[in-house]
Image (tube, rainbow, N blue to C red; front, side):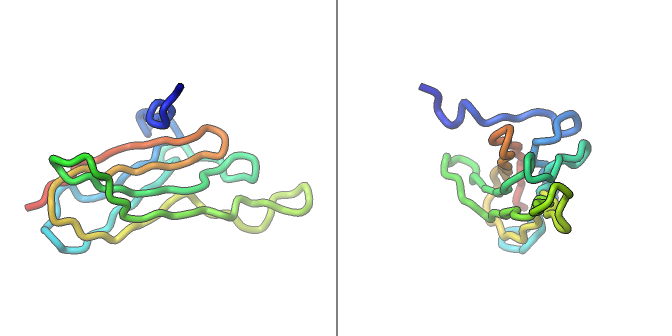
Amino acid sequence: MNTLSSTVKTADWKAEKHVPVISATASVKPGVPFDVEVDVGKEIPHPNTAQHHIVWIALHFVPEGTSTSIELGRADFSAHGASLSDASGPAATAPSARFRVCISAPGTLHATAYCNLHGLWTSASALAVD
């Protein structure tokens, strides 16, 4: 039987449109708020149609020396250009999210994104606290 972790995909975001890209400073002050942006399709745009789209992005933090994931935030995308006619609808939500967070220990940021056709994708970024 497959485990969920065996189905999670990763790749170089410069060559694969499904990988969530984490943009954040590499080092933060303990307890001081900072912004983390997560984008899907940073180099190669991901489609955003009713047939093929990013459903959600989530951001987690794993403190150094632990195996516990803390969910920092989640963004759901519900507008994908759907329409009652054959034409594209008037609105779509781009797969990008900004999270304002406070971290007090070093660890790793993990972003996940779910594509309705191609499943779950992830990336990670180390975070130092000084």
